[in-house]
Image (cartoon, rainbow, N blue to C red):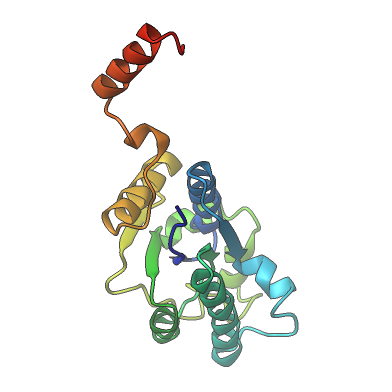
Length: 201
């Protein structure tokens, strides 16, 4: 049975864990036989959005491009997973309206934790004034007002956050049953016993 397409949109500050979560959710969905594509903000910038800067206009153009690809994938029954900072609420809401089947996941992490993590050293540079237009330091980030899911990557494990997202997808009826969802443990044992008595296993 073909599943319906939808978009999972991860938003949050740089280093909050969007890509890590996107990749884990992708694995879970593929295990259910679903077609999935991940659009990572950094990768999209190198390909679809080469030449764009970090002004509000350029950021909006970048997000619209990601949204356009997600819309095409969703329309063709593919699950599109976008992991992009997407700092401005109005453009995220515009993309939501365009796509329709849209699940917004806010990856919340306090700035002080991100500065501590700072693998690429970008926050330190931004705080020192070496990088301008850096979201969360000298450029605004507008958190979603009503996201479908909020995960707290400073205090939840990746596993806990992924579970939270999967529960919401199930609740919204976006998931086909997983193999283990088909029977309860007791029912599975009865079926197995019956097949054994018939000599099938």
